[in-house]
Length: 159
Image 1 (cartoon, rainbow, N blue to C red):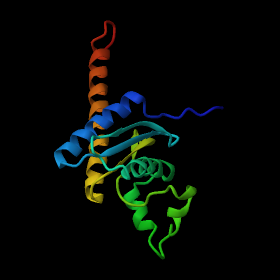
Image 2 (image 1 turned 90 degrees about the vertical axis):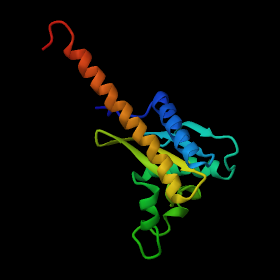
Image 3 (image 1 turned 180 degrees about the vertical axis):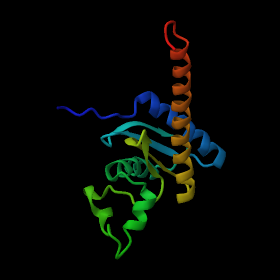
Image 4 (image 1 turned 135 degrees about the vertical axis):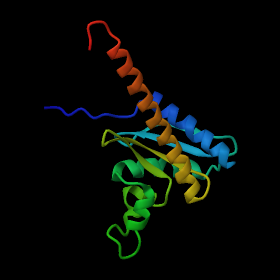
């Protein structure tokens, strides 16, 4: 029997990019932000004016890394230290694994549906911008569920 995988949509990704851009603007650093789907494939990307060119691939690879390993890139950075369980993982996947903070899986209903990756500032700032994208999506989904529940309970013959 085929398995259906939930994934982020382009609309979800655009919403996340908008929230990340707002967070980056608050920080005062132009950012590169990438969103990937459940398979780790790029859905959407934004490069704010004057964002570091060298951070483009980092943002994309952070998102992909977070998705393919189902862990934040911050956690992977700890697991990849000499003597740790995943030492050397940064050399896997044609060297495109990024093992410092800024990549976070997107989880909906306990299921990973994609990931976001950011790059331009410090590790802490990258994490903050990525988390802003996820928080905005979660808030939107919560709002949509509340609105849907309200519409369904107001339908004639229901209740």
